[in-house]
Image (cartoon, rainbow, N blue to C red; front, side):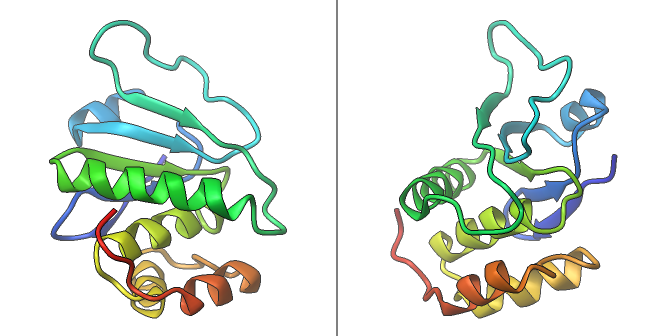
Length: 144
């Protein structure tokens, strides 16, 4: 599993499916958004484990936009409060990048800036034109 750090000033990452929880501990990722259709295996359980949010959707269409923006606001708030956030899906190209891009808009980036940044950090990211076009249309959002 490879992590792709998106934002240099804040700990925002995208990745394919999680197969190594140790790498998350090393990067101090403590909030995970799983957008894949399957739950990850061996999700850490117990006190003071990473926040784990499961919001599966297909990689063909936009999901419920209100829920997606609510997750983006949460992700931005977590980053703003010093947490490291991972957005992941099956391959780490589209769904994870869509959410990461929206998180960036709540951190002050325009959608176009977010797309450019993500594509510069993750080769092949946002090849889903529906997702890329949606992000490009999003203006920088006010803080949460």
